[in-house]
Length: 187
Ligand SMILES: [Zn+2]
Image (cartoon, rainbow, N blue to C red):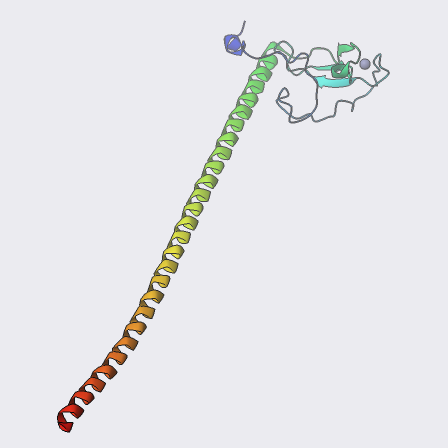
């Protein structure tokens, strides 16, 4: 009956929907009035005030209805339209299209948000990996420096020992020469 009807076949009926939570996927828009903020009072079989919801079904978009507030938790079967149908076919189609547009944007928004979260996680992981590599490199370099310092200390000790030996050798040579010269002159 409408040009856009075929594109709407996947749209699920929200006839059984209830809930005024603005986060609720089923409602394309937040409720301006809470479900119990209406007069005159309508009492259901549970002796509780019936809740007034907005239908987002394909058949009656935007029309309000009354339903047992506890319907989801095993309440009674109260269900009736709150008001007469004042929607024209054009307005109904407009509401369906707007509803679809809002839901499509919400879906797109969720996808984008998920993409942002994934990108943030990837960036965080990359930073953590880079930091980890840097820490490992710094630890390796520190280790190298410590090894070099230990090697230098050994070399310095060796040089000092050699210098001591050289001094002793010089003294021995001088003593030997003195002994030889003494022997030559005494003979
Ligand atoms: Zn009830």
